[in-house]
Image (cartoon, rainbow, N blue to C red; front, side, top):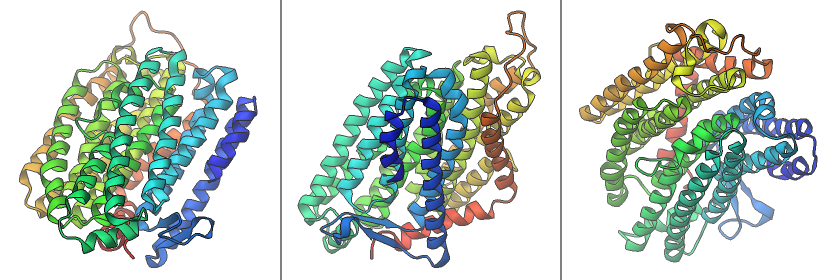
Length: 488
């Protein structure tokens, strides 16, 4: 609630620096509270429930936190705070002075919406928060028009597709409400468990899966994502890449495992025959599409679609081990893409470059930033001693445990394709010499960018060597969904 409340004063204050400070303090407060909640759920596996306004569920709106969404809230707070550190110089470079306070206000609304989706235990309240975050996201993507007017069409495309996704979701919620008579997700879970193959409930689940699949950029519902990432302001791309699709993935987990049961025939078939094939297709097709991109941000946007495929593959296995691997990749992917897009933001701030051919000689001109970018890129490929290797290792282990050798093959093929598109960029940075038309000495990378970039690059290495803390969080989150969740 803090970011949502503070969005109003941030909008009213005309000074962009003050609005940025308000945003930083609001997200920092959310991070501290998220850490406290996370530690409380980790201590004894407790489920924290809060009735909004004192109206007890199922009649009132309930906020319900377990190890699954506590981990997500901690990730949102951490990446949001680091992204805001990066935002200071980046937003000053890309957003007009008179619009910066409105920009930070819209960001706070987006952040509040994502946090609300991750914490609510009410289906319609989830829809409201989903729309709050989406509408604010459309606005902050469109504000990239100053650098490239294609940001406007990217935002409009996302608005159209996001509205379709939200419509599918609320129709699904309507079907389930019509059948169960409640909007409280724990109450819905009890009512659905007492039914036996109710067709209206199954149709509701199908609508929800399509609607949230679009928000999560599940192939082939990902068409909004490449342009949104490519033309949004650098800060917006960094924030969305580390949060937005992760929250949508969480919603699919919550409905598949907790409101419904992944072991029932309809949901199980959806996992095996819908989610898994689309995940495999996304891993392979999106990775292949990335090979042919010259705009580096667009390249990594297609890479993100492939990474969503990895997460969905873990979900589609419908096992605790598979879901833990999917959650692990969710966390690790936030670290990889956070480092990559922050480094791209630093390159853009110094040289205004986005295309691979313009990256020639950056290793000599900006060695520290280039090294951080390289760490993120190697982690994306899955090189040992990086977080990318850890999550792919656990995905392969889960696939072998399920007897899915073909999924192992898909993971390896997708990783090999990633080697080729990452190789193109790294060769330009470290091997290809600067040409005659290069821009000369770069501007010094501000400390506000260097620090969060260094933190994320270091995290890719530290948790690639000492993975136990992240693996433990992912396993606890998966266990909460499989064995606990929202069901009392």
